[in-house]
Amino acid sequence: MMLVINKIKYSISLFCSVFIVFSGLFLHGCGGASKTNEDGSTHYNIPLQLLVNDVDVKANQPTHYSFTYDFPFYTPAFTEFSVDLNETLNDVVINLTNTNNKPSSKAISGRVLEQVQVYAYVSGANQANTTCTNGERYGPFSVSVENNNQAKSISPARATATRPTLSAVNSGSFSLCLEIVSPIAASLDVDGVAIDASSCGQEPADISGVWSGTFSCTNHGTSNDGGDIVLTISQNGYSAQYTDSEASYKGTVCGNVFEYEGGVPFSYDESGSFVLNVNGSANKTSTWQSVYDDSGGTCEDTLIRAQN
Image (cartoon, rainbow, N blue to C red):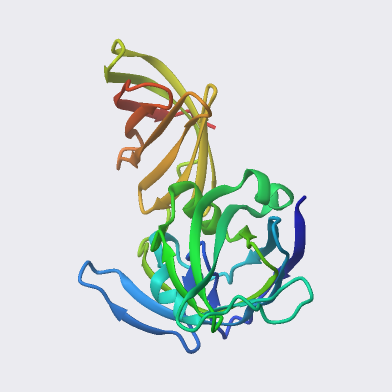
């Protein structure tokens, strides 16, 4: 049985912070402390106000909490981000209750009371109705809850966004679904999130259209291959996706570089970069890996865009 708690479309004032938990997205603005990390990324402690508040979690069944989010027009493209889940736990309270909706009698001072599992799913806003089933999945995250209702620890301790997730959030509107599994009834509050993130400081080049050319792959576990190739790229600002025969890919355009990830489901995964050259041609490099054996390889494409 799947319990859907809530499905809300949030639109925050342009004068305030924009942020989202578990998928790790942010745009600071009002009240979020920040500092620069050694690697040049920015660390943010973002207050979530009432964004995730009093979520009613049922016992022994997946509870889903989902919403669609629209970004202000000035939101930059995110080239990478991750959530420091251990630090985020400082702002998480999980109130455990028994079936009579009273405090659990299992509380033992200083002891872990329960283990709660959390998954997160992310997709584009146009796929909001299927985010909980078909979105990019993160988790499971196992949360240990003490008798004082404080989330004590979480494993794994960090969640890093994939390129398809970056593509979804950089499109300006995306959907997030949280799946919470608890052995007893609970309510969930998340007051803040700790994030490390980098953003793109360049406008996205226009790479949309039909591209054709040649490719060459140097492989292991299978023979080398190459030949002609045709790509169809669709683009919405910083977000782009393309198809290549049965394969599909999503990613982010920063300047003249398109970083993507995808492949063919149940066949192979592939990720790489598409670079738009000054003369209008493009070069694409990628690495692929089979999902069912050890075969894989690296590929290089030389492409030109078809005239409109």
